[in-house]
Length: 391
Length: 173
Image (cartoon, each protein chain N blue to C red):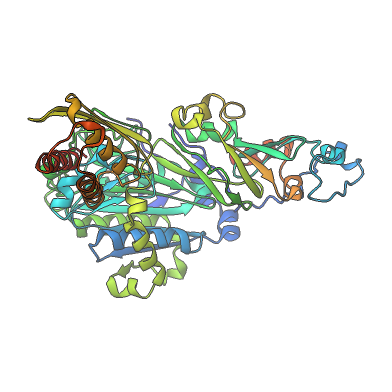
């Protein structure tokens, strides 16, 4: 492992190296005066994932692009997928819903992570000109090694690891003027729960977009008896404030701003972003195109299903029963599913109900192969239950 | 892998319409109505056909005033392996600098902006199946969309090849 980039702590003074082109940008005095950068730090007291991610979005979109912002936050349990991922491929959506655990699609790239209060998140927002994939992770590593005595390092994937095990995952977002790097930090997370909610066997779900790259993980608490959310926040805040001390506003803003529900309630845009993040259109509708194939042996027939979806909507569905007797009923089901939301219980119920009603009206004898109402109900119920379980 | 910075508007370099070289300067100014598509004068207006933006998009305008848009080779190198492209929506009217699509590469989601205003008349659906076209052929098969320009003056203001290269050089140090 080559040494991390040069700023070295000598007698508590950061010697600012100019050997790295990227970082010399931060230190050239010309740049300081002409660019007028300001460093700010926010620490959230809220543990509501929607609120925190909406506040992060507000910091990124609605504050001055010349501000370099460090934001530290943690969430109650939730699963967070990358911008271009398929929730059904990455998580056990059904189990998350059953346990009332939010599923969040973030705006940055990368893979799926599971948050709980044993995990602390860091975000560094900066001008796009200063963005590199390594920068933030390297600063966080310096905070861990110098302030908490944890032998962490940055990996090739720009994650942070200790002893070969990942403790922090990274993701990035770049827009016209700004960029951010945000990452998780496993401090004392229930690692078994990660597996429970994120391990899904969906080999027959073929999706465009980005798949997660699972890595063995560990908690920082295995390497330090003193590390906690508070001590991690303190270490990172102190290290970043020292690193960016030339941009700390006249010494007046040296301590972090505490963000709580009351603070956030004064920013209407945060509530707006929060609602946007919660919409079906963003969480599920943003899913890249995919197909999902599954099959099941029922008492009345063997059935194969093939779903095709765009923007989370079922664009086509093919159900193939081995028993020809149900051909017409199955056709009616196929028609009814088209245009519905994939995996959405309410939409599945609506699709089934429409078929029940129309089949009862027509007597289920289109094409001459009549089946009784109870038989029709049974097939519709079985198919419904199966599709819910499988999606 | 190091991610070379993608500089944006925050720069101090002023771009004055991209008429930086002498050859362009001695040409008489062409004054033409924005709606004169198909007119022979229009052809002359786009005489310097391919131009660039500071956000590293290129646009190549044909004689009918339709511009093919993509991201530059410099940009794809900086981004690294592209694994997903959200292609621009066909039929949509966009303003210059509107967000028209996105790419994901090495865990970074990057927005793509319209270099000019107009209607998106076609998107490159090949990118959905093969996002790596952006890396292998950024300025040809990896094109993103075709825009019917609604304000050709905007095209004139973009960077020519030389100015764009200067811009890239200024970014890399």
